[in-house]
Length: 161
Image (cartoon, rainbow, N blue to C red; front, side, top):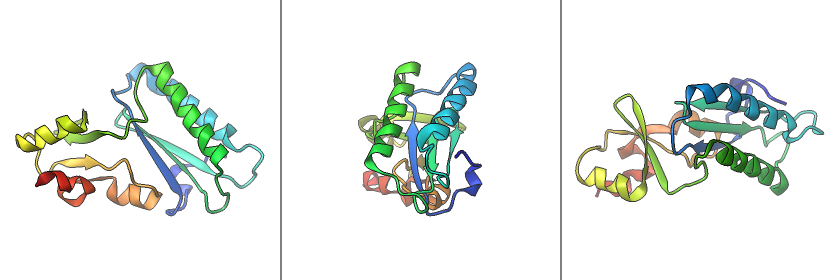
């Protein structure tokens, strides 16, 4: 069942899918409808299953599910990945590439390959104070507290040396 994001417990699972490009304004409503439809059909036979989503910065699809009350199976995860793959194909974007980095540059969210990100750090185009998005966080609590942090406070700080 689709519920508001703030009704999901802090220890719930979360998945962040950064898009290789910003979604166009005219795509947003349709994408949100597709996500809502997916969540409503994800585990329809399980009465107390709750899930939610956010679409942030016109770039990040954030899915969360209360896997404490209702355990997610491998099949459930495969279903979610299949849905994300469909979105990738429909909108001609990459959503599953974990070797790319998202960070803020001024008011804009940048999406770069890791090698390009390292060059930006080396050339001081971004610094340890630059805000990075840690798309590897796994719980709602971590998402709310550690997703958007300065590079120096993230696991990306290893590239500062």
